[in-house]
Length: 251
Ligand code: ADP
Ligand code: MG
Image (cartoon, rainbow, N blue to C red; front, side, top):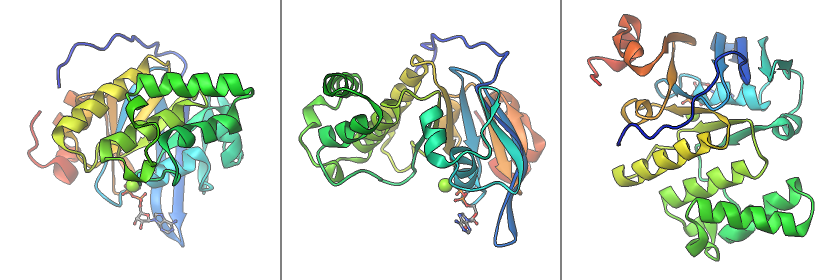
């Protein structure tokens, strides 16, 4: 993908999201051990790790699907660790599932349904839905049942749905997985567009190449912990990340 069209500069003083020493186990099996991570407004962070390394579980602790065993989650410097999932969503944490989770109805109704829950006033609801459909190139698909959409189209719809609530933090779970190379480029472009909405973004993937083209920094998760963190170039030099994960991958 072409580089050099990032326009947003972000301030690195106050993180919008902080994960502090989060640990989580399922049925006594540790999945995450003391994970810490900072995300700044308008920053794009990559979360990389093999299948089963705990990426979705970490997202689950941030959105409030799972209770943490230890540690804290802070949004805008406020502790939200004890808040339930719907309150965190209201406060501005949006999550895009790695699965094709859409309602069995038209593209337009998928968006309007969410708008009707989170926005007051029919006129406003319709105008935001129209704006997002235009912005994310969905207008021509508006009457099509969402279950019939292609992989790239469904990702665009899912991204639009997350934006309706005006989120501060967007967690994208493997948004580039199982897409054709050309569609990967298109979704990369739309993810970069999200930056202009002022959101902090975390993107997970188990492949680095496509992800590292669009992130400012990344965290590598392995053996239940963060094994490397930094700019993509720095991470690729990390001996531990190479040993455990990348092998001889070159940028
Ligand atoms: P990733 O998203 O990195 O592929 P996951 O977070 O989905 O990894 O899974 C990490 C580990 O936690 C896996 O071994 C998975 O089987 C286990 N796991 C995930 N969710 C649950 C759950 N709800 N109950 C029990 N084990 C789970
Ligand atoms: Mg996952």
